[in-house]
Image (cartoon, rainbow, N blue to C red):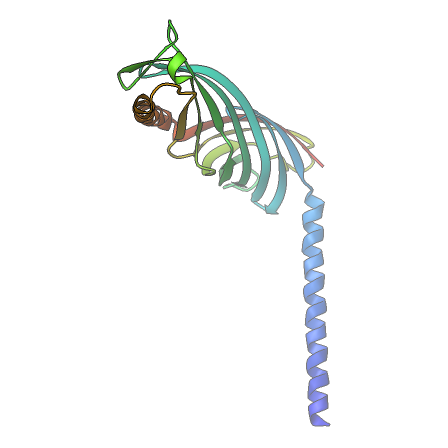
Amino acid sequence: MLGCSILKGFSSMAFKHTVFAFAALLAGASAQAQVGAAVTADLGTTGAGFHIVVPMESTLNGRFGANYFKHDFDKRSGLVDYKLDGKLATFDVLFDWYVIPQSNFRLTGGVLYNGTRFNATGVPAAGGKFTFNGNTYSTTDIGSLKGDVTFRRAAPYIGIGWGNALTPNKRWNFGADIGAFYQGKAQVNLIPYGCTTSNAVCGKLASDVAVEELRLQDEASDYKVYPVLRATLSYSF
């Protein structure tokens, strides 16, 4: 009997604690729901994009979104000209910390999925010639040169900003970001397609193209740190 009484008492206390904990959780969720969320339209060095902004703490917001920027340009590396067809695609997980409560100034940190990629096509010089590593080849013998330039996928971000998309009693807000993300050393792959001459020449071509690959990789690695300058227009709901 005593054991049953103790067990019943313990069960009753556990049930009460569970009810109180659940009520507290609902209250917290309700408070968060009252704050709402916001969506932003962004434009800057990361291209055009959008973010969903949600409250996490009284001075901390989370931002989750994507950006896209198409960028085509010509580049000369060594004695080789390239046409680069590029897309800058990023998916962001960012956290904005408002150092001073009720202030618009924020510190931002987070990580990006970096889908940036450039497709490279070698452009032969006059007369249909390529010069790789000091050696000249004819396109009639070696075909074409193609490749790609990519960077590390996970890129940490740090920056500062102005504006709060979740400003109370204000639907529309403007903001700005100044920062950078680290995308690391470039990864370059260059491949000659259609070598129709002797195996010895094709082997030498592959070796010379590998030298040009390293040269282009070294030059592209100047962009290990990518600057972010971005303006935003947000709407809260």
